[in-house]
Amino acid sequence: MSDTTDDANNPNNRMLKFQKLQSETNEIQSIFSKNEQNEFNEELLKTMKELTYQSQQKINEELLKTNNDLKDQNTELKNQSEQVLKEIRSMKSDLEESKKQHSSEMHSMKSTMSNSADSVLLPDTPVNNGIRAIVVGKEFVLKHVFENVSEIGASPAYSEEEEHFNIPWKMYVYRDKGCIAFYLKCPKSLKVDEWSALTNIEYSIVSNQGTRKTRECSKNFGNKKYTTRSCSYGWPDFIDWKDLEKDFIVDGKLRVEIRVKITKTTGLYGKPLRNFDERNKAFSDVVIVVKEKKFHVFKLHLAAQSAYFKSLLSEISPNAEVEVSDIESEDFQVFLEVLYGEPAINEKTVEVILYLAEKYDTHAVTKKCEEFLIDGSGKEKKKKLQLAIKYKLDKLKKHCFDNIVSAGEIRSVLPSDISDLHPSTMKTLLQKSLDLLE
Image (cartoon, rainbow, N blue to C red):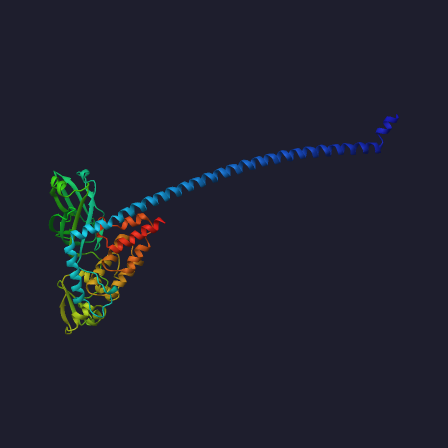
């Protein structure tokens, strides 16, 4: 063999070659691995930058949208608040005009209040600030101002629906053969249990100077036998349209009123919770007669809770009959149930119970009604505020004001005729509106 062959087959030489080859291989792998890692890092960095840019763009878009929404909300709130402020600031002039129109009525009312306080209140009667509400019976007045009257045609234009003594009411007008038709509507369902409401109604169209066009009638609403089973009543020719335009329409607006006095009702409150008929005779010592219906009651129980009955029954002999007028027997039924501890105060009965509690000077019952209206009633704020003002319920009134949180809610409690607002109520609503602007 040659020397070359011997060197190639020499183990030492082969080992050196292998080590050299291994070193070169490692170097190549190292370079390849480094290049691959650099490429991966660059791709990862590129991807991260792209994702970051996209996320930032999305965040910026959301922030811009939120900012625009807040601007829109603030603009809407400002517009609503400014509108309410405008309406409330006009109250003063409206009130002044109303005072001029009704100065004699206000003077008469003050005299009545003074005489009533002297003759009716007893020394031990607990009342709010020494002032009682004036109760004139189951009466109420619906008022509304129709706008754009020239546009009214054969289709009725309606007032807002109001609930009084568990019955809904609203007014409507329309044009009919050269006249204006004027109606009272009772939307209470005719498909429920039998009910009826006999009413005396006075319809009036009122000018800005206080001139009135008035018509009167009696009407029995409801679904009982002998009722007309209709839900509306009025006149298709209340006044000639030309006379209406000449004497009553101002700036396209028409003021209307309907005064309703409920003289008899049946079937409005459901089944009695307690019997006061002959079955209760053994637990009574006096009989209260309301429109021929007899209520057997315990004299001391009534006298302890009512200054009125304390005076009425103080000289009555045992088991005598005492007639009470100017109320309905089913109204007196639910009132007695409250006096005897039954849970009779609910959405249907609370208004009539308030009315009788005031009429018979029963402060504890008035308080229970107020608590129900604050904690348990789902009636609208406007209705609650009306009852609070009418019956001097200071806690309920404060509750209503405290829960007004928007300009829209201020507008919702305003009457259609702003001059009907008491000055103290107007002041509170104005302050509330100013607070919402801050």
